[in-house]
Amino acid sequence: MEHPEEAVEDRADESLLVRVSPAGLGDARRGARVDRAQDPRTRRTRAAIVEAATTLFLRHGYQGTSTDEIARLAAVSKRTVYNNFGDKERLFTEIVLGTTVTAERLADELASELPHAEDVPGALRDVAHRLLETVTRPLVLQLRRLLIAEARRFPDLAREYYRGAPGRTLGALAAAFESLAERGALVVPDPQRAAEHFAFLVLGATLDRAMFEGERSVPSPAERQRTADDAARAFLAAYGAR
Image (cartoon, rainbow, N blue to C red):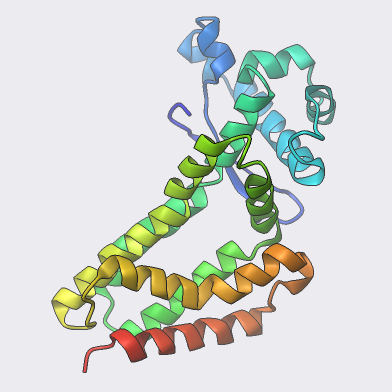
């Protein structure tokens, strides 16, 4: 994906953020000028295609979605889809990797805030709640299930998504825990393992249930808060400074 700069959110739920690159594979093959990719009309067209494709992929799966259907829902021609994204596979790739923008933002916030927290238990509860809120959004869960279903067809894409989303978040947590340990606020022999423990305490059971039972198992705000508080408390029991 080339220097993504534009984001699209689902209008109904506003919970799946998809970053759209300004210049796609189709443009590159045809030697399109860079200023054309920056044209507001081109950007709007690309955003409309991504939004339509995201809706259809989540509704019908990769195999069950055709380029004709994407073009029809986006109110563009099939040629326009090809000119902007090359083919359906490239469009799917852009959408999946574009959703890592949420993980990137969360990781950046963790890197800038958590190492300097004065109230470490409160900060851990807040991080746990943000993780739960982000990962249990219905469209995020749908995307995760879709990517797992397509992992055999797109193994490299699945690995890259893991590095850009769960892996990036774990890395940010590990770095933050290491900094807190240096301050004496935590006792962390292995920061990466501590990050994995924290993530599983927060997400493990809830995410497993949501993967199999669907959106009806998504916890309420009160349940998320209770899970986040309990996870932070358990983590501090193991890693808190004494």
